[in-house]
Image (cartoon, rainbow over all chains, first blue to last red; front, side):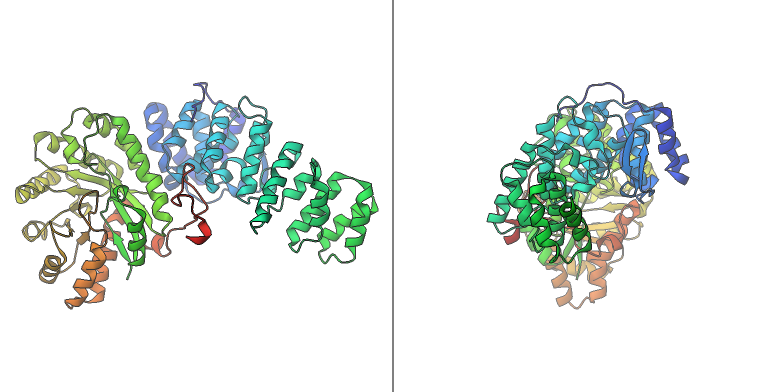
Amino acid sequence: MTAGPAAAILLAPMALSELRSLLGDAAATADALLAEVRADRSRLPVVFPGLPRRLGREPVRGGRRTLGGALVDLDAFRRCDVAAAWLLGALGAAGDEVTGLYAHGDIDERAMALRSLHFLPVGQATVALFGEVQRTNVVLHLEAAVCDGDLFVRTLGQPGFDQPTANRLLLKLAFLDLPLARVFGAERTANGELSRMLRDLATEREAAGRSVWRDTNRLLGRAPCPGAIARLIGGLEHGDDGVRLAAAEGLLALGRNDLAPFAKERLNREPRADVQALLQRFAGG
Amino acid sequence: MLIFEPHIHMFSRITDDYERMALAGVRAVLEPAFWLGQPRTHVGTFVDYFDTLVGWERFRAQQFGIHHFCTMGLNPREANDDRVNADVLALLPRYLEKDGVLGVGEIGLDDQTATEERFLAAQLELAKKHGLPALIHTPHRDKKRGFERCIAIVKESSLPMERVLLDHGNEETIKLTRDLGCWSGFSIYPHTKMDPARMVAIATEHGVERMIINSAADWGVSDPMMVPRTAVKLEQAGVSRARIEQLVWKNPIAFFAQSGRLTEAMLQQPARANLRETFDGNSVLRGQDPDKV
């Protein structure tokens, strides 16, 4: 893993205050831990692993919320994750401190370090740890880093995280069957090369008699590659409700009026109301 | 019957061992940091070893449904090595705060040198500071005197006796430890240390209160099945199932629960295994189909 530069991760005072308020009655404990580390910076790697025990593992709750410029689903974040972000932000931790906590953490500590990234300014530590998540293939860590927030799209374009690199991370999402909707805004990054990669993965999976990532059709519709239209039309006939829904969404995104007859033909046989609604919109257009 | 194997060095064992242990009822293992058979020459190798205990080894155990915990410490043999001893001591606090680390260990005495005694005392202080129990290795040579020195150093430290496990005991040492309030550990080996028959005799004579048995299996001639084997021998000898369960399940949980990081409820289900998942890009499958393993 490449450690980030020693530049401090600075959070705006307003964001720090919001994070602290999410800690509820654990805020005083967090203050004490911050003071301990401020007095002796070498205590950070000692304090960090104990955050779940001391601050709690319960979800902070609050649903989708914009916080310090980040869109997150607070239901997916635990109090210790927020405390980790608050602590690192308040300390102005350097990128290599964050990557170091990840490198020497156990599986849960690593997830905590990754979730804290959502609340911290995007930087080289984010890119380095996205690289680790891509390499290591741990579902919990992929979820922690890219799901339940818009960190993925905010990181896109940073040095070291270009579109091809981002495509590989989304392909990993498909490989591990995590829903695209949990990566906020990721559908906007659809591109032809990603569609080709997803199409090829789908073909391999089908040849092996295995299931295909449902969101494949959503992305194929937004950025079609050769073979995409056949998959979308075929998807309307799939026995899995989720695949049909994604195919209908994909066709709507594709916006090809000449394909509307396929939607009309399917409409009368479609049992699901949400799929019907999409087909109606497409056929009507 | 469920079994908590409270002292085993899985770092040195193969996946067949995990599979056999799981089949025999082993639900959880505790792996003390220890001596790898060859001296380490710089602290970085300890960092990697400690990271393996909380990382890859925990993952490997999970793949067989076994919960993996560990204790962290500077083993007595390498406590004598000035190339690493002070630096390892400085390294320990960050590991002693990790959730899966249930104690300081294995620490103790080997050659019974003054340096070993200094590092034992220093690590007992760490146990106090981090609110953890201590797993103490006792010497294989001049054992009785070694036990006496360990007990004296523990008393000087003022670490509560109930948070101390004096391991690798035998018929002689049980007489020293029985009334101290500490826990007595017995390592059951195929040919050396204790064997199942001797353990049956000890349990029959002294009962099983504050008593723990383990295989201490490692890279040497040893057997990870020694706890289940001993449980069978105890049952054949007429020891009640309740007492056997206390010895191989309740007692080790009670001892390590003093860390505040372990409860019996955490072990009600097997560890979550997901053969499709990897750790640091690595799996135990060696290319095999996860659906067929």
